Length: 90
Image (cartoon, rainbow, N blue to C red; front, side, top):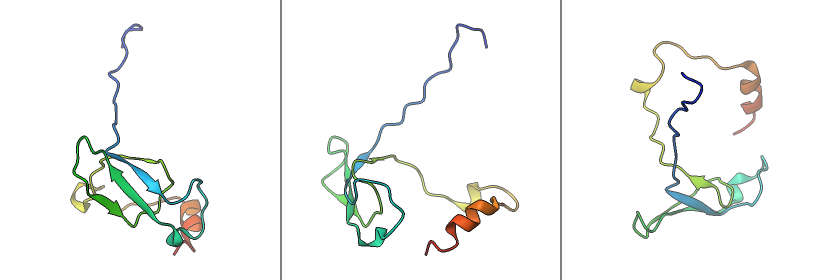
């Protein structure tokens, strides 16, 4: 790419914000928190999504669900540190 050319920017616009829950990230007792997703009223109706473990003010992006058919073909692996980190999560 020539020096003066820049790639096109990719902009992600939140579809809503988290309201409630906690104001800080801390890995404990998320099950006792109450948080909702308040959708952008200019683009969506008055409904909201409840039961989310999230930090107050977090932007919510419209990310599609995982589908196995679009996932990696063949087996997957993860580093040992990730397995150790999640060992007692639930």
